[in-house]
Length: 278
Image (cartoon, rainbow, N blue to C red):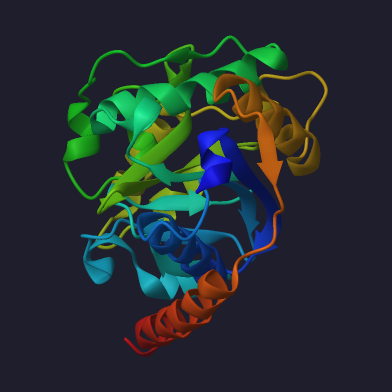
């Protein structure tokens, strides 16, 4: 695309969407970018209702107690990316969808590191002294039973004082990739302990302590609280600067993307309905 030769990107701030809508939209954009139809895209969004997302390869009934998800009024959805279960509750979610070319032509970890820069700079802008994880830490307690994403950190994810504040996952499709992740505004991750299957009171207590020790949110670190709208503006600005974006394309989806979106949305709704029957 001629626009991309000028490093043109589309940045979409979606706000709150349903679990199926969020994942269908990420999938539709990924398909479009992989086919050379869609421009490189950054999307910033939230969830309604709060939602548990599970990794692409996870078996939902083995990872999450669906009755407890329903009892809490949470949504449930499968991500196209790998990784472990995440509770999306009062956060800013980002998605980067782009071609595996030029600055994104390296390994998965190289791309993680590239995307970590605007995430890190956004936190620094609001005086949060975050840093990039450079190693792969191991916590034996988080490996004893099914553990959520925020119970440990992966390489090139963002931590603050040893606690995870952003969790991300990536998938590649042909010549394109999708990386999306959760930026915690407020810390509700301890609720994940109540959603794990086969866990007794003692295990839930241990997991809650682990999540409290391993996780921190933006507003736990600030004197003046910040919301989705304000942080989204900061995040957008840092993506533009760190990716050297010199042209912003219209936010609207292409006709081909909308066609894919509605088809995938129906598939995802059917999948979610099948969880409710189980």
